[in-house]
Length: 213
Image (tube, rainbow, N blue to C red; front, side, top):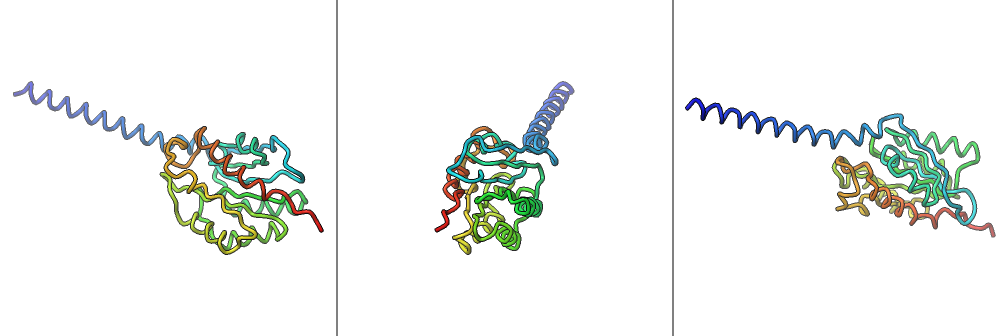
């Protein structure tokens, strides 16, 4: 009986250790993307190819975009990505570029991972961009993948301001593509970076300013 009890105890101990190891691995898979794209990490890249005239479109993003900077630049965008960036910070960037007269005809904001997006912020972005330009908005995935309130706000803005807001529905395009992402369902793997670049490339038609009559 003693032997049996000892074996059972050992088995339970081994099972507990295995369960703990599995939980630790799952935790690493979720935390690793955030660590790899920590707050303050930043990348900037110029567009790798010329458009059909004028300044290259600009895409402003957070840690998600950090994983796809080369791909977005190759698609024809100037790319500015920083970990933990929030929508209000993007508004400050757009205002500064407008003052410097370096704001392109198409400005894309790919944010929402680190805070909630409000319609008032989108209205402010439209005001800063101006009526003569286009504002692109990328719908952000929620933790684990899928849609949320930010995507709903962006889609509503697209319906309300169809002549000024371009909705780049990343949530819809990436739905069911688990292999595109890290374990958190948000940060990009290689395939996800290529997928996001294709989505951005599809908006390039709006990057060309109309000719003056």
